[in-house]
Length: 436
Image (cartoon, rainbow, N blue to C red; front, side, top):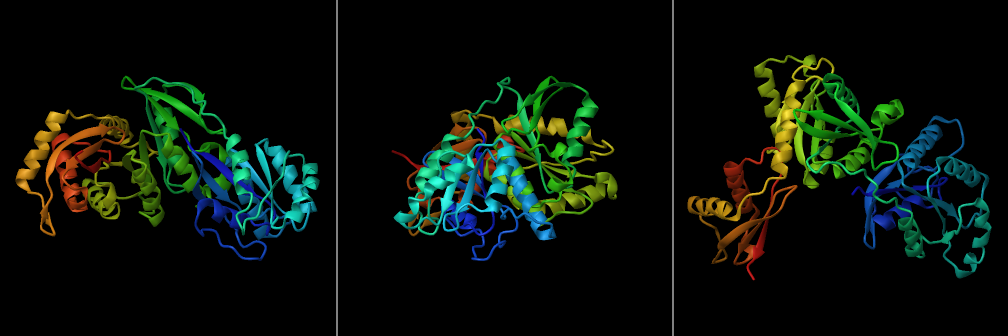
C-alpha cells in the first residue's frame, strides 16, 4: 500500500517550513523570517499515530510575473497536483489577505481534500478570532502554532481522516509489478513506450493508486506484468522533466508498489550522484533491482566498452552488487529483448524460499570454512538459521549473543547464501537472533 502525499501550501511567510520541520521531526527546510526563502518543494517522510505519509514543503504562492515568483507558483502547483491531501496554511496574525483568497481559488480548482490551518495562534485570545476563516469555504479551521507545536494533533487527525483508501484493482497473484526510476531525461518514458510498441500485447489500462497515473498491463512469454507509470510522466511535459527534485517523489511512489525496480542510467551523460541516491531508495525498500544502461546506441558499444562501463557501474553502486546490469537502447530497441528475462529472474529470486534443512547445510559449511570470530574473549556461536520472509528474502540466524555478530561476518554468511542459491537481482537480509 502506497503512502499518501500531503502538501503544505500557502502564501509566503505563513510558517510552512516551520510546520514542515515540526512534522518530520528535524530541521530540513530553511526557516527565515523573510518571504520567499523556500523556493523549491522539499520532501520528507512524516508519521502520525499509525499513519506514515510523504510530506511536501512548497515555496509560497505569489501572484506576479517576476521569473522567481512564476517558478515558485509553478512548483506549488506541481505539489498540489501530486498531493492526496493539502494543508492550506494562513497567518493568524494578519487575517485573510487577498493573496490567501487567490490561493483558495487555486485549491478549489484542484478538487483535492483541504485542511485549513491558521498558524501563529499562540495566545488563547487569538483563537476566539478563528471564526472569520470559515468564510474561505474549507470547513473547520484549525488554530495552530508551529513555533510552539500547539494544535498540530487536531490538524493531523483531520489530515489522516482524508487519506484515500487503497482501491487498487486486484490482479493475479503471479503478476510482476515493475517500475522505472532515474533522473529526468534518462529515457524512462521512451523505454516504457518501446516495451509496449515492440510487444503490442497491451491487455488493458487500469487505474493506479495515484489519481493521475495509469498502470499498463503487459503479457510476454506467458507472464503477466504491470508497468507502473511514475506519476503520469508521459503526460506531463517539460515542467515536470526539468524539475530535478521532483524525480525523488515520483521514485518513492513507484518503488512502494513495485516487485522489481529498473534503475535507469544514461550511457551518454554517465553516472551522476543523483543516480546513486535514487537507487538507494529502492535498495532501502528491499525491492529487486536491475540497473539499466540506456542510450547504449550513442556510445561505442562493443563488448570491451560494455565491460568497461559495467566496471564503472560496479564501482559507483557497490551497495547493488547483487543487481544485474542490462545494456540497451530504448530508441533503437537494441538489446531490449534482454530486459524482460532479467525482470522475471529478479522477481523469482525476490520471492524465493529456501528449506530450513538445506539452508542450514550451507550455514554449517560456511562455519567450517570460516569459523566464527571471538570478541573480547567470547566466541560467536551460530546455532541454526531459517528463512522468515520473502520480498526480500530474509533470514533469522540464531546465535548465543547477537552483539557478537559483526556486520562483516553477517556479510560473509550472505555471500555464502548467494553462492549456494543465487538470489541475483534481489537484496537479502540477515537478522541475528538470540535463541530463547
